[in-house]
Length: 74
Image (cartoon, rainbow, N blue to C red; front, side, top):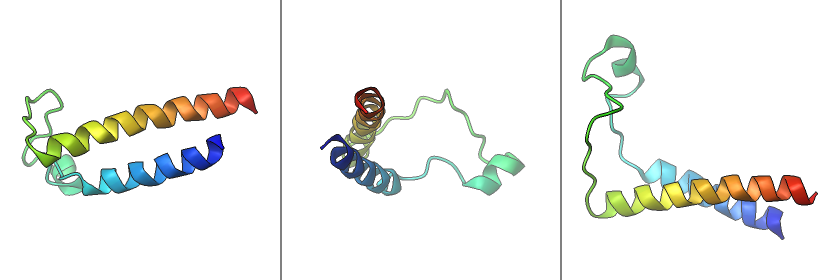
């Protein structure tokens, strides 16, 4: 039961991660320094971006908890 739930959460987490918009220029921007990757920048998310971001965070936490539960139970 828990393993099936973990697979569903994993699939949803992958889908939501792919739906998120990129916040930098990609891997080339990270190496060349173009655009500046600032992890502490104040980024305002609005509308659907905020919903997807929050859902991804909740699913990530749920994934972590399920992995720990499965490890403890089995």
